[in-house]
Image 1 (cartoon, helix red, strand yellow):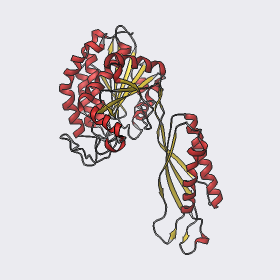
Image 2 (cartoon, one colour; image 1 turned 90 degrees about the vertical axis):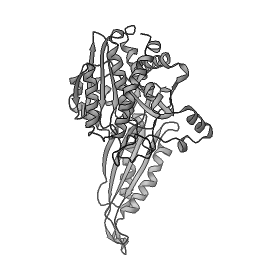
Image 3 (cartoon, helix red, strand yellow; image 1 turned 120 degrees about the horizontal axis):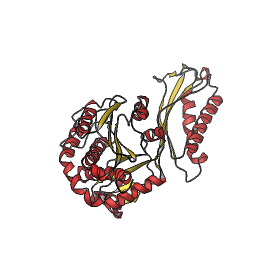
Image 4 (cartoon, one colour; image 1 turned 45 degrees about the vertical axis):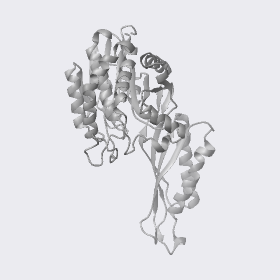
Length: 411
């Protein structure tokens, strides 16, 4: 199927319902595992278009459209919002206090729905099985695992490839792809170190966990600067240090919260080993009365595109949007939990970036070196993608990627 020449009119028609639905979802954001209105809206659309709909992980929705023998494609969109107070001033700004779609998941939902409707309306142009998956709770790294724990892998047809995309504050109308790592693995670590409490006037009777925590923070700065090979990506952030409650009491413990980002699981393992070695060593040097405690949480897997699948989808994007619109993106330092789903099925996957900032705004910021200052990033209270053409491009991208496998002349 020559998607580049035949699909544009159909996608344009979808905007008539997509834009109002996007505004509705943006106005009524829902946090992870509480996406009840969003789930209901998605379910109603898919059922009306002939998809067999099932629910996994509470609010997760999966629609399956079988269209004869052929390959299987799973396409995923995340649905949850963030605990952020919106500051965009948009006409359709969030009406829910303290909750906002600050990461474009509402746009991901309407784009995948648009692609699903396009495929449902054009079954003569493809064969196989198309599975549209709408995932809850990406922002807490809980949603994909919740769907898997609820029987997702055994409850839907086995796909051959998985697809996902993310709207980012890059130039609208563009698609960024890359083989290999595209999003980092992410880990949060809670470390508790123990001291011996005492009166502030009697420091000699204490083992001060505040001083111990300070020593650990300084020493941890060497993990990336002195233990990671130059040129290998690694980030270690100490985001919180807490201990004590008053000025004249030396507490008996301190807590540190760390965050790690890596593109290489071997680098991650080395960082974890270094962190634990440093913490244990500093505790021993301080005379800590008991061993430190480590809790790993909010863990995001590495997102690393299969090279062959990425090449196939990138070629489809180039045919659809033109070579000037498709570029090789650098790996992003953000993280997400999508890859758990294709990993559970043992299949390759492709994850790509969709731009959302008007060209003149983006190019001016790039020329001035002010992208970070002038263009709100994901999770910012001011993050607001340009609705058109971003919805149209994201919809066409989902459809084009699926048809790279399901198209009658591709299978």
